[in-house]
Image (tube, rainbow, N blue to C red; front, top):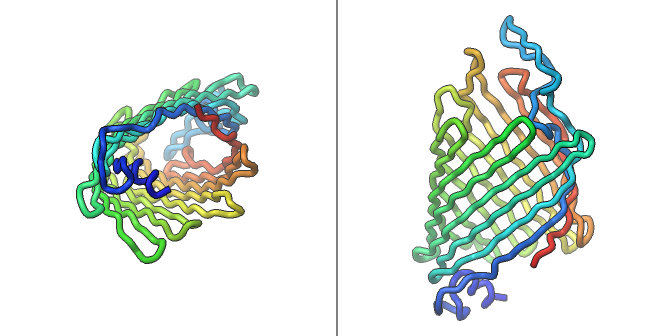
Length: 296
């Protein structure tokens, strides 16, 4: 196990000896997905928009449609090793889910690559980039990012390790570009407990609703030889303008996932957005099932 993990980090002979450049096999995997969506078509809230003394009546044809989506996701991933403790991870994901109730589909795609570089004494310099796109009946949203992260691995005692990360990210949205400061800590507490936290601070963007500050955390526990995963996040955004009215949002997400069997995992969650413009307030549960990936 130790030798195999060292080889994955670029020490191809297992112990501090680097051989010729190698890479992991390209892995293709496909899995079935089933999830509830409160906005399948990318529509608007089914209510009037109230701004001060003004009231705008929405078009029912453009209201958000909710329901069950069923589909599949294809993932392609691999690793190219080019030095001791230096390698490139890459990942491509695409999925399509369909609602029989509304005869509508949702297509998503994402690509990412991250160059991990061990400098010395467990200091790392990582350069990562990626992009994603979600296409619905009404909306077509995409974004890209490029980040540079300095990281340090620390030992906190027996079976306890920390990875501290600090760096910057440039976020490319469809209508603006924003620079962000990142800080995070990942911890291995024991063989059965892991945790992590990432905080983001974004620069102000004139007349655009953009992240001001966000924090996300995750916890992994081994229960009955299966991994229970808990994730929580809060995103605070401001700077938005709608017909001269300021808009700021606070969005909270919580999710829990756990394998029900060796082949099926379930996830449950809750989302709530509190906006300075009530029209954009939302709250709803999230749930879904995911089949075990078939790799080849």
